[in-house]
Image 1 (cartoon, rainbow, N blue to C red):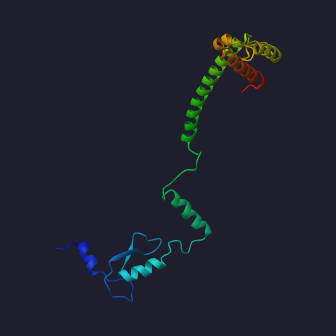
Image 2 (image 1 turned 120 degrees about the horizontal axis):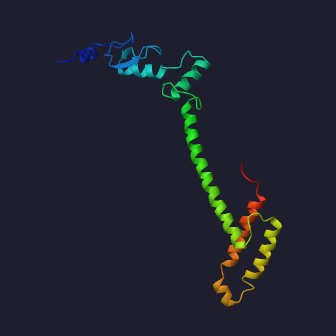
Length: 178
């Protein structure tokens, strides 16, 4: 026993007036009637598909609107930055960024404190005093001045002094971040 849907398929005649074959293949009636169909035979549906142009008759603005609409699968959308969620999202990440900056400042402050300790200076020292102290320590601990026993015991001392000098000099010459 055939269902009514199957009976309709068997009894349909091709929508092309010049054809009398069975119309099995649906095609939309028009751009405005996409859910209403004409039924064609295999040969006529091929011709219909070749000639079908969904955008036929649209002006430039209408065509642009259709293209924009298809980008979001014909669903409503909002422009970026117009919803409060973007503000909240940015605000949340700024909070993390601020914590990161505080942590970095603490690390750099500890590093800077350590650098002053290595050179034996206090934090309110000026550049001239830092350079004088570095030259004095560099001459004392340079590997070329050390004998073999001293070199084995103090081989990283000159590197530590040089790194501390660079850190202090950078902190004194670099503009403070706001």
